[in-house]
Length: 74
Image 1 (cartoon, helix red, strand yellow):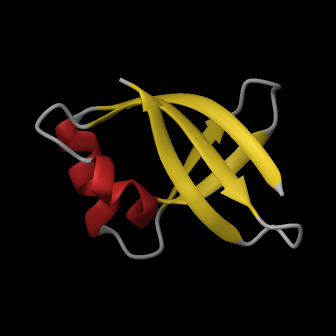
Image 2 (cartoon, rainbow, N blue to C red):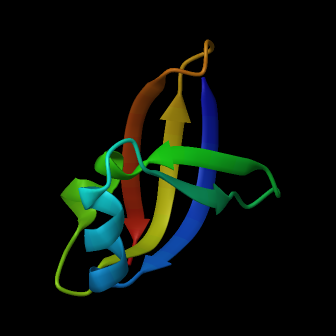
């Protein structure tokens, strides 16, 4: 498994626009400096009136297939 941790802070309005566009990805840099592209739809469970905010952990399989995205702290 490959595990990546990163902080994300996107406002409600910005995320709403991202999510409405098809095939949109959110680009983040993990704690070790690696650049990740994650489909915006993966963040919908974490979308609130504040937008999408927090410290996340992304887990990918050995073949770099999505396994889970977890909010570690807000």
